View 1 (cartoon, helix red, strand yellow):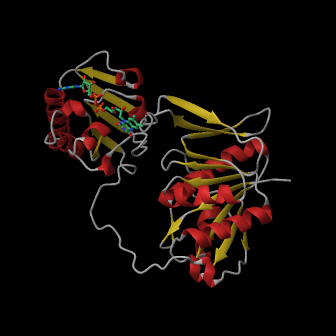
View 2 (cartoon, protein in one colour):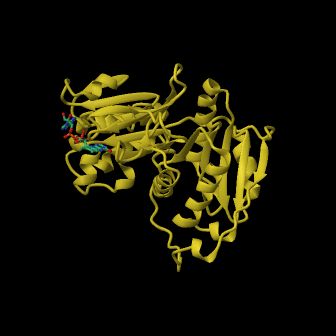
View 3 (cartoon, rainbow, N blue to C red):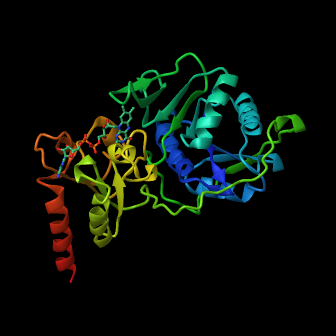
Length: 330
Ligand code: FAD
């Protein structure tokens, strides 16, 4: 019988990715309704030392597969390993980050083990009656949130967006079981040749890490408007971010985009400057602790979810806010 919640832990160059830690926290929350264990699956080359990180963040058990072929991510050997583990352990649920790796791996695995996959989920829950996993994601261009169940096949599989779920506090005293799973790889399992791994060198701020975001929408008027927002972000010790409209206009890079097709952020303070509050934007920032909206249209939907609102022109209000904070500091 299927049991336990498996989290496919993602590592890059041996560093466990934050989304995997978040997923272990979420799996732990879900496991309470199912009375099952949380099992992390860690694949890589010379990776076993990292297993204790996963137990410190809440995994009850870690299944480790080590092989030089798993050193750099490649679809075939990773898919083979995960499918073998699923066949061997028969998990109830399998969760994976909706990262570039997760988005490549999870659909292949789900097709091979003949189950469904709900991609890009923004929330998960257990139906108390059926004990099925309820997987929620934006659908129809973000106009509705669809809750999907996979009631005829196991495991129930979902990829989850980074930054959405809450990690547990790290507890180094927490020890879990570590199990090594042996897979015999052959030359044929590697159907590509990795000639070189080229890492992006450009320096961009990680907006998912910032405690304060000053986010600009089309209402900032032009690309230079971000300089004004940066001034405020600097005095608040934060970063700038953007709606998609400005990314599409070429005013700022995609790395700064918040929303359904951008990043999900949860800062302590999110200032939405000249952003209307389209559902696709809100999907990426509504979990922020405090939302301050500045918009010249008092009927803008952003005010419906804002904790504080200022009706007015961003070009007047942002410099005034900056000035007031600076004089408060001095
Ligand atoms: P607008 O909707 O044009 O709003 C501008 C706002 O600025 C208005 O409310 C206006 O009153 C106000 N304003 C104008 N001038 C001033 C001023 N001087 N002072 C103060 N206020 C002013 N959008 C995202 O942001 N992120 C996503 O990830 C995303 N994904 C999408 C995915 C899909 C499949 C689709 C279909 C759309 C997606 N969108 C996304 C686009 C989204 O629907 C909106 O079009 C977009 O968010 C609008 O951006 P905006 O609020 O900056 O612009």
